[in-house]
Length: 366
Image (tube, rainbow, N blue to C red):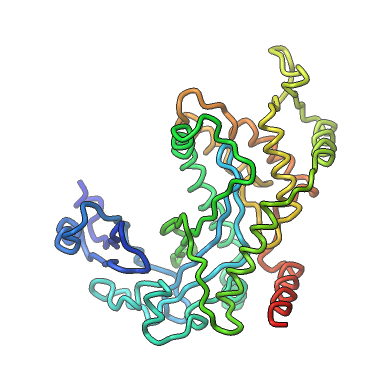
C-alpha cells in the first residue's frame, strides 16, 4: 500500500536524538526509505516526512520561517504569535532535480548548517517585515500567507489539546496554573501555491545570540523575550473591565448565566454558563491583551467561527470525564473578540509596533 500511496515521492529523514541539521537526509523514493536503517544503524526510530517538491523560493534559495508561539492556556487553549520572527535561508541555490536533495546547504535552512559556509548570520536570515515587504513588491499576497500560517498553527495546537489534557491529568489533577506558559518555536515552510506546512515544533527554541553588532537576529529574540515577560507577569486587575464587557454582550442579546449566582438551572435560557475557572480564564486573557507588545493573539479571536466544526470533532477525542471547557467558552470569546475593546488583531505592518521596536533598538545602542 505504501508503495502505491507514495509512488514518485521523496522523503526527508531526521534522527530523533540530534539537532542543528545533523543527520538529516533526503531519500529519493520509497525503496530508499525502506532501507533507512543503513543510514541510521544506531537509531531504533527516525522522523520521516514527505519532501516538499515545490518550495516557494526567494532569490532562487530555499527558506523557512521560525515563528515564536506563546501558549498561556491549554484547556481552554489560548495562543499568541510574535509579529516578528526569523526567515532562514539556505546558502546555496536550490536544485529541485538534485539527487538526495543535493548540497545540504541547498535543501537545509538551519542557520547552524549554513553559517559553516562562511556566511554571516545576518545574510542568512531576514526579519518578518523584510520578507513581508519583499512579497508585496513581487506581487505575492503576504496577508493571505500570514493568515494561513496562523490558522495552521492554531489547528496544530487544537489537534494536540486532547493529548495535552491526558498528559496533564497524569501529572496533576488540577492542571490550571497561574503564570504558566510555554514558548514554542514553530518552523513553517511555504510551497509555490502559498500553502504553509508546519515542519516541526521546538519545545525549547534556541535563544542563543549571534553577538554581531546591530544584529536583527539578536534584536528579534531580545524584543520577543522582553514582550513575553511583560505579557505574562502583569499584576494589574481587570475584573471591572471584564464585567463591563460581559454586560455589554448581554445587552446585545447574548444570554450568559453564572454558576456562582445560581442562574444556570435546567430551565435557564442561557447560551453559556460561566463557572469559576471560566471567569479566571477571561480575566487572564483580558490582562494579557493589555500587554501584548509584539504578540498577536491568534486563538481565540474574532475569526473563531472558522474553527467551530473542528472543535466539535475534537470534543469526541477528549479523555473521558473531561469538561467541555474549550468548546463551551469558544463561542463566547469569539463574540467578545468581535468587540473592538477585545484586542487580538494587529498587522505585521503596524507602524506603532515597529516604531516602538526602533525606539527600543536606539535605547540599547545608547
